Image 1: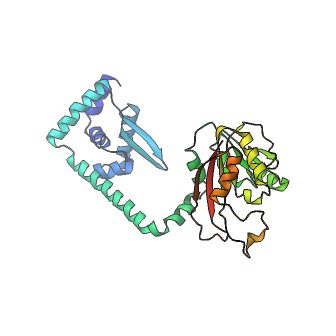
Image 2: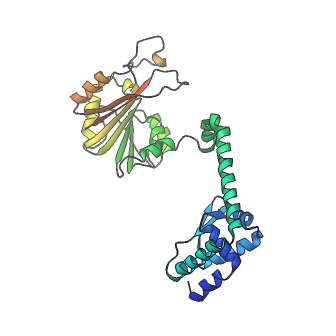
Image 3: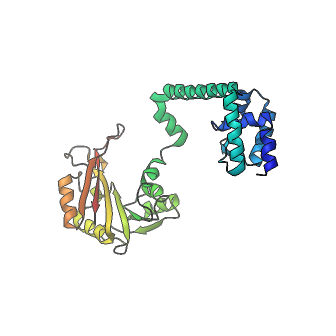
Length: 303
């Protein structure tokens, strides 16, 4: 910023008023118009100049443009410090500041009223606005970067579609060709392989994490399947199992004659240890009030 430009900008009362407010808060043209009681055209014109000359930073939020004071250096910073001290000492434009504080306080109240009104229906409101697909990828983003993840028994690719955006590489394995066809249409850029859990079409020590989501209760022989998972996991890799908790044989049998009606922590832990996997965690998952089947657990094992 040139010396004469900085002096000219700070010699204009309107521009000084705007800078004084934007040094306190990030504001829109409309907010500045209300705080300064200036025409919006005047505010916009002066903001454009101040932005062009390096006094302001602006950013777009939806349809609104917000402005704030830039991080000033050298002469502009020194000149503004002198101007600000003079404004504070003389109490100039204090009414602008009071109006701005009132506007911001009113907005905070409006936001509080909004959330107070929608609190009881907020879950449905958020689902309607944003859906639910973002939840799992957002949580998975907490895991270390650069990992190769395999969905073993991937079915139609529902979990793969959420794993793929946050994994370095995602691989799906399933024994059913039709399931893989649906998964291929859902996640066309993910590597899909046909294979059984007891004979995985994967190289040894090639996977950082494997997930079996509601799969093991379909598997007749668990020991060979867990040995295969241990084979393909890299040292220190993890297996995540989500499945049914052990429950009594009853009339439901959930429409399919499963080889296993759920698992206990001790029973599955013993099988995992026999396969060379170290049990790390086991916890019950919160019940879904709309679910008809038995409760679920999530368990993690380390190779």
